[in-house]
Amino acid sequence: MRKLFTLGFIFIGLSLMGQVDDDIHYYTDSDVNKSRFNLALNLNPYYTDMRLINSDASNSLFNTYSEEFKATGSFKLDYGLDLFYEIGPSFHLGIGIVRAHGGYTWQDVVLDTLNPSFLADNEVDITMFSIPIKVNFTTRISDVFSLEVVPMVEMNFLDQYNGKISYNGNTNAPADSTFNLNNDLTKLNWSVGIALGGTYWVSSEFGIFARGSVRYLLNDIVDPDGYSWPRETLLNFGLNTGVRIRF
Image 1 (cartoon, rainbow, N blue to C red):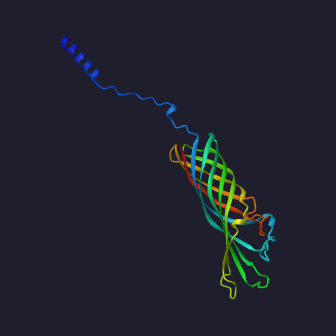
Image 2 (cartoon, one colour):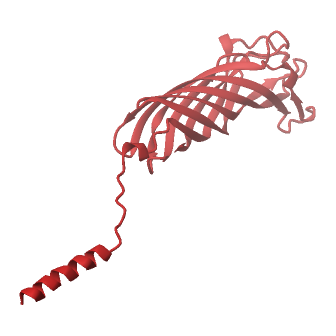
Image 3 (cartoon, rainbow, N blue to C red):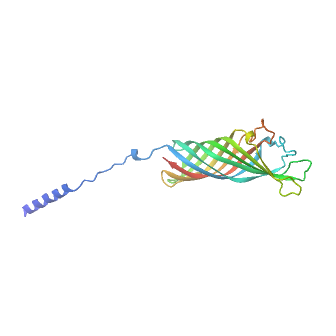
């Protein structure tokens, strides 16, 4: 009997030695993605409206341009991307490129004092390339949500100013017409803005953000030294939405 027990132990030992050993993997912090860079793809719906700098409406080719004329804004859509560097967990610095738009309509403008009954609407559409410089102050509320405050300064390179004069079917009025001031724009224009909202992190590398935003163009749209025109600028209210990707 003792020999049988001995042979049994020897057989068990040989069978254990014959098994294939699995490699044991140890995960350390070095295996975790520690990149400080992330990319934000932006799609920004907003309402854009016109403002007069210093309430100045007198400097104009419109014969009776007045501060009392009403302007209505319009809805636009910007798109672009930002590259952020995470200096710290709560402080991110970014720079981007955006294709931006502006638009509004001057209503019931008198273009000819000899025919004051010929009231016209001047519909304006503006486009530009913008380079925003942003600071993202972020606070982690939970494992999946970050609260964010994003002030910014932008360099804006205006390239198009298109206008459409419409007489709205007035009898004996001139035909509707279009014009552009592309060669008379302030080429480099600055704006300031701020966005408030947050990011929902689907994973540690991918998030979806939505923020309310406001932006104000600081300089004249049309160069005051190059053309006789009202000192128009833009004020935008809307959303800053998109996705963020860490890499």
